[in-house]
Length: 167
Image 1 (spheres, helix red, strand yellow):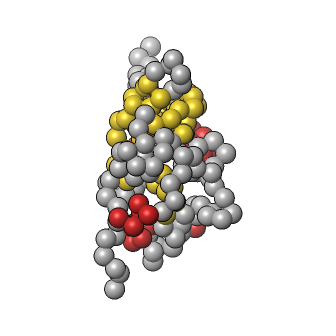
Image 2: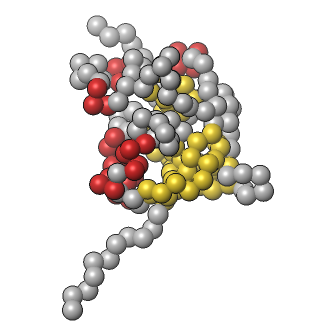
Image 3: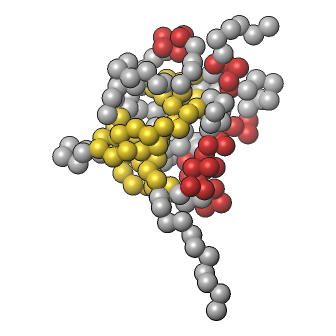
């Protein structure tokens, strides 16, 4: 008998705060087994204040890497496999827009913290800091999230995140 192919059982924790949360427009990405494995683990909050803003013409929620500014942000922790992380890295334009970093997340009074991957915006124009900070993201008709497949290639999201005016 042939040996069964060994599947990596190591799961990582991923903190989601925006459109990937349950009930939000991109949660289907986590729910699709074609992208890898993801299972809801618990609700959580950042251990430090960070600015969560809605920006670009596509109303994308961004967590800016500027500790001490904004609010403690609430979100959800999922257990994910490497395949799902790779799928999300591609979808989240890792390197182009976001960076994925490990940060401790608060999982409740008396429960302590747990290290999780989180997608942060490292480089951003200063004017993003003048936007309204949120403690929690919900898609709304006021700032409707535009799904990736409905965005125009003429105006990629990163165009709205550049430091210089476009010609």
